[in-house]
Length: 400
Ligand SMILES: Cc1cc2nc3c(=O)[nH]c(=O)nc-3n(C[C@H](O)[C@H](O)[C@H](O)COP(=O)(O)OP(=O)(O)OC[C@H]3O[C@@H](n4cnc5c(N)ncnc54)[C@H](O)[C@@H]3O)c2cc1C
Image 1: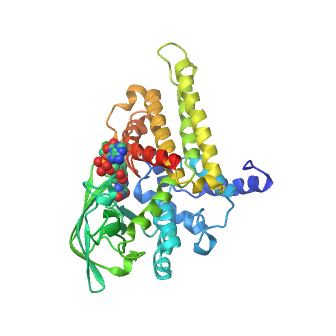
Image 2 (image 1 turned 90 degrees about the vertical axis):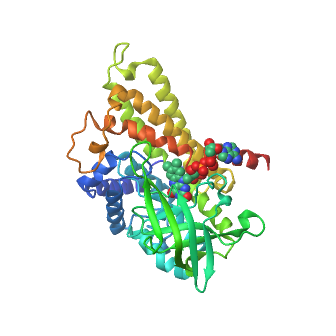
Image 3 (image 1 turned 180 degrees about the vertical axis):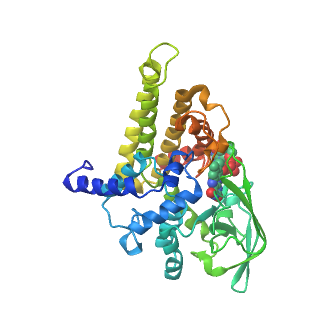
């Protein structure tokens, strides 16, 4: 596949670069520098989403009929590359990359008309309500119940690890509508059009990095309309699996990884090594950085194959392979980052990390984010299905 720049792509790259150099506000740039997880600071990333939407560029992967820009796969990659190498905050994935594409495939025309515009424009943020205490890897064991009552369902139970639920105004979730037969056969996929239904309570969880990124959500006799159901009642397992393919498989993450490695290489060149010279001249550091660069390059090739429509995407192992590779690369980059920063990573700088904070940071941007990024990235091999379980799925697919 040829995705090297040709004349058209060069012009396109220049047009994208000009916009990305001028459109972000100082707060959005600061949020990009202070992004320490897959989820950039909420207010600024949503503001950036709306700016991109105004330019028609919020959803590069969406088809034109739903508001996508109609770019080729090469253009989409160039856009991701230019966006990520500037360290701009990545748009939140739950709407654009998860429930949006799902609704295009399986939603009713009414659901598409009602929900896709808000996802495209950045007016809505959807949180994902799959996991429960006791239902993570074994998701089909979920017990949050929905009992039909007239045109509504009455919900009782709880969800956990719902990312940014304290900011969300919508939620897609799995509920138990039957206890007959196999546990997978009694699950229904539901869209909630509000997060403030009477009986709903959202409680943030403070993560290992000190940030409230995930939440618990409790439901006590919450009445919601059945019109939010996607697919048939008790057929939610197949809908959920379809959405997980988007969650695990989608997007080009390697440009962001390359950007992080570029930053690390430059920082290492300015960091003294305890053995003399700079860290960048240290043989062990060079080996570790080189290995990571080679692995990121091979992951980039894998992602390019996929976004160019290569049949590998249809292999059932693809989403799991992609998830395992990208999550483990992220963790390795975070380890290298703490090695470059050294002891400067140790102070607790949560106050300075807030966008717009008056607290002066100790050290440079890298010192500010190294430890929270390292700590937060421990979760990459857990969320979207743990890597142990993904390896199981890959093995099963290879055996088939
Ligand atoms: C930061 C973060 C964000 C998240 N965001 C969301 C969200 O927005 N919405 C949502 O619904 N959920 C979310 N999750 C939940 C996530 O999907 C679950 O944590 C994950 O599926 C694992 O489930 P669990 O935590 O119950 O662990 P468990 O399933 O209890 O697993 C515990 C350990 O046992 C291992 N294990 C379990 N079963 C097997 C098996 N069959 N073979 C081999 N090993 C196994 C696991 O690999 C793991 O190491 C998030 C989690 C985190 C950490």
